Length: 348
Image (cartoon, rainbow, N blue to C red; front, side, top):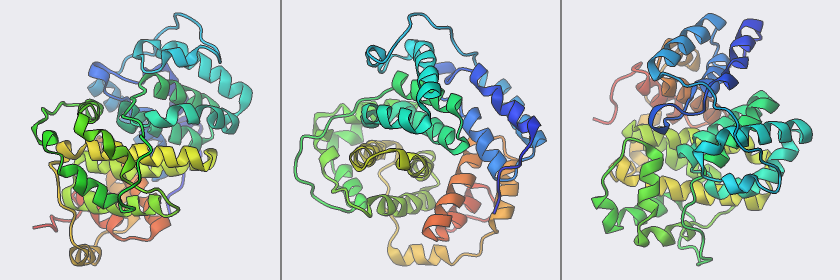
């Protein structure tokens, strides 16, 4: 099992990350702070981490963090929700807040407000929060909460209607039957496609369709890895990793907040069906056959991911490993190996 390698050189690199903006051109998310942490945890050396970041910084044309304009406080920070231009002000507020309160208390106070906006930056603000928690780093968590607030993406709220199913897969099947979704014009950014899908009047009831229970996260994870294994789609990868990120911050939420995050997360995933091409989940017998495929061990998968310049290769290599450690499903290893080109297309 890969673990983080202690290194002053790696820590120095990670300490540089707050100097960079959370987004670059066209509001693409800066993955570097999180992916470097993931890279370290799959055995990446300081040299490999620096190699990845230097390439990422140049290719993405990362921007420096912005300057503060108008100070915010505990009474006013919510006025900046969803306003990207206010992220520097939100950073200053939340970094001070987390430093004063500690990570756990700051999350318990803030997550009830932010949970309905979990689709912020297509889950990348959630990602940054989860990695801040993973690193137990106050500065990282403060920056992450600011990013979540600045990119807050409100979706149609619950109407309190009775759920129609406890099966996350059934919610996706029912959503696929919403005719106007099939006519949407897709954008390059996932968060914009979530926004447009959820703006449809016919989409409004979706948030209440799923009954949330003690096994909901596990059932979502099962659907997520089946979806990714079947499609290898960029959006499906985010379903797998997103559930890992929710799991990392779950200890800092009460049950009501966690239920909200799960409900809205799955609402957002349903909104990405046009992006995914309205896929059909593979049958159980097909999944069982895929699970039996000989795939490299995680040490080899992680070695391949460490050589990649694709941030999503590194992200899925870490998250899939962590999810398999919990759920025991070998499909995580098979699907990840295919993503990295270590095995062929088993869906043919």
